[in-house]
Length: 168
Image 1 (cartoon, helix red, strand yellow):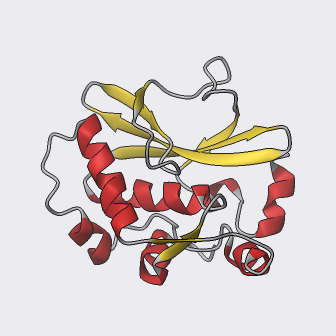
Image 2 (image 1 turned 90 degrees about the vertical axis):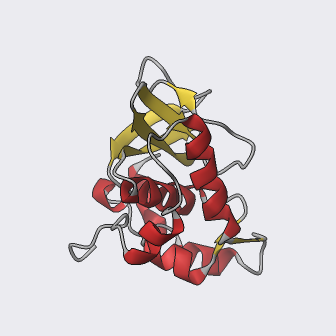
């Protein structure tokens, strides 16, 4: 949107992960995720919040997500993946935004390149840990089908709620 990247690394992003020392390993990816969650309120998604959630879905940059300080439970996988990827980029890590689909639903996860290979990380669940490997058509993530990979959602043309029609 307007030439701005969702995952632009800002001073705030770099500051949040400034105490994470290289080399980065799986445990440090979890630490990055935990730092991210420590800055966010997980708001309930229900009938009274549905319209607001739709109004922000796929529209915020990582900086905006961090500044707003909230995501909606069960509807925030893209925001969480975007914020996590930006934090990883602040540490100089190569990342990919991964969009998945199944049965009319969509999901976002991250891939991160570490010294010993690529890792899949679904940061939308705080109990998940990074899994070595990468998502391909032949190697799906759990039972999700790979739709596309890119740097962020906007790079895939996902910039508003109705963008979901491109994926399904």
